[in-house]
Image (cartoon, rainbow, N blue to C red; front, side, top):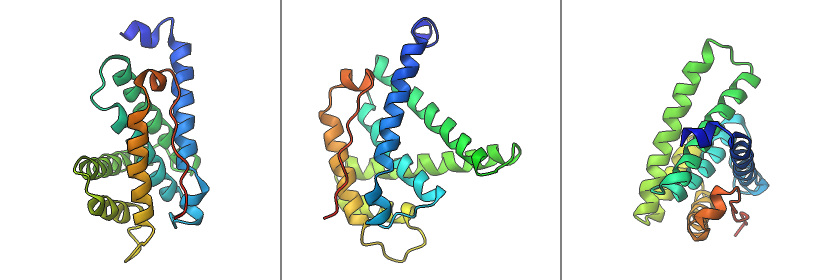
Length: 180
């Protein structure tokens, strides 16, 4: 297993990881989130959307063994390396990065637990509440949370329809977010 990940096939695996992560980032950066659905176009708002899409990818591969499990883990590692790199680009020093990373990791795993629970129970109201609480904690109400929750449920369904073999070979297709 490790030979495959870190040995001869390292470059191929790196290319797959980069392709998958680029597709996740592209999905998280869809303009509609920030322009129409009032997700804050700030580093934290972008973190929320990237976290959400990484979660959706992880949710799709959950329970898959073998290569799919390895791909899921490598993508999580890539996500946190990207977050760390972003913190450094924002000017956070070496002393502050570990503290911020710990906080962001706690935020990520707390959010994913709430989203996972809502999706597993098919509880749209819980998903709307979790998204509103996490994406717009500054807003007393956020009407667009319903649209985002609908998008999340749609993505979850569509990712479930995609063959695992296609995903682990580097192709994941997120639907386009549309205004209602």
